[in-house]
Length: 106
Ligand code: SF4
Ligand code: SF4
Image 1 (cartoon, rainbow, N blue to C red):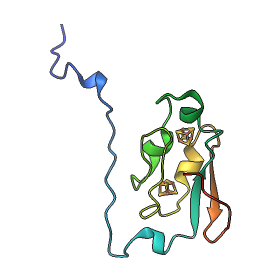
Image 2 (image 1 turned 120 degrees about the horizontal axis):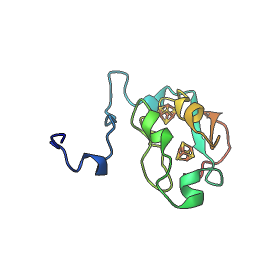
Image 3 (image 1 turned 180 degrees about the vertical axis):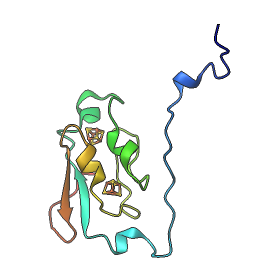
Image 4 (image 1 turned 135 degrees about the vertical axis):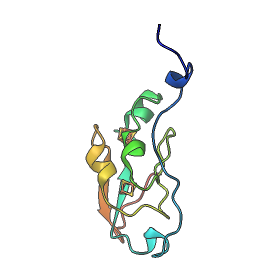
């Protein structure tokens, strides 16, 4: 029988997600040109009220999306790379230009 050194590992979320900090260039929000906007009508964790996706949280290289219902973007640290929008399996994230007057629901 296999030695079970980590008996509760399957109950934990095993992911490497960093905590954002201010870098030498300051807050990324000061130079970002695009920003992600989450459409809560399309986001499956909101629609199903279950933690059943969170791919945006997992793939964001800056760790700026929360693993919550609804997911929230920390715009102080988001650099506008668009990876979250690319990885969202439900096309719930749209990248819009900074300065666009479109309102952000989160
Ligand atoms: S990846 Fe898309 S559908 Fe999944 S939690 Fe994020 S916004 Fe919602
Ligand atoms: S645009 Fe990039 S930095 Fe901003 S929340 Fe999405 S993945 Fe993270």
